Image 1 (tube, rainbow, N blue to C red):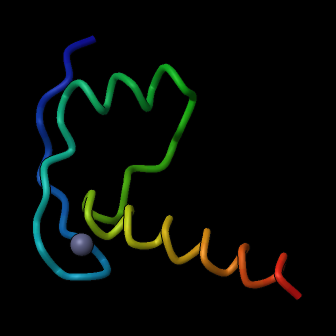
Image 2: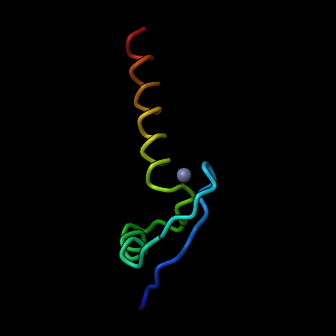
Image 3: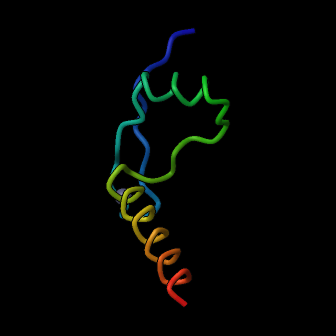
Length: 60
Ligand SMILES: [Zn+2]
C-alpha cells in the first residue's frame, strides 16, 4: 500500500504539520487507527506536562 504525505492542522496551536508517509506506515504497523491531531512540538509539550503532573503526584 502506498502512503502519501498528509497535511494536518494541529488542534492545539492551529499550525499545519505533515503526517509523513513514513509515519503513516509506522502508525499502521502499530495498529493505531487514529491520525495524530497535534504537531510534534505540541505533542512534546503535552508529554512534558503529563510527566510533570506525575512527578507532582509522586511527591505528595
Ligand atoms: Zn501544535
